[in-house]
Image (tube, rainbow, N blue to C red; front, side, top):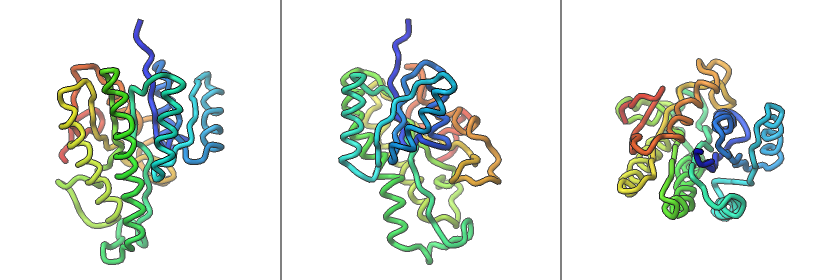
Length: 238
């Protein structure tokens, strides 16, 4: 009988994060909802419970190092380990102008907040979880990136967000390299333009499709890839 895996998904009370939890739970994984607002996390868990799916909730603010340590400790106390980490929490706060927003109008505070959540949050979570994975000899880390962070197709618009996702891709590569000799797989994923609060109502993909590749990467077999960037289960350029 296959071992039940324990997953932590950050920013999981809505959008792609919640759908990742849903799809993992359907596979028999214990998928923990990491939510900055516990009440919203509990509401999300109740929506899953109505579908017959059980999802624990932990308070998790990826901008707060103490919150990260406490959340990881709570999960380990409950389940003994963490097998899967999905770094999903992110912000998109560039402005004004959306796709026309200019680097020369970017406020330093906007850049700082963006990097705090989109880069340092995943870094801190990875640093907290990897030692646990190393003790058990198994781990899957999935970083929710974006085509907006591809250097091969870098352009203007949303400068803070673009730079943060390029940095997240670099974090993915560095982490994968350091863990190359272990059974801890580390990959980045572009879910596509997904209809969420961040993606907006005009986005082309539903969350169900956006979550499929992150879930695939979260459940890779031991001979699966590491250090890659994927969309629709296929490698894409950095």
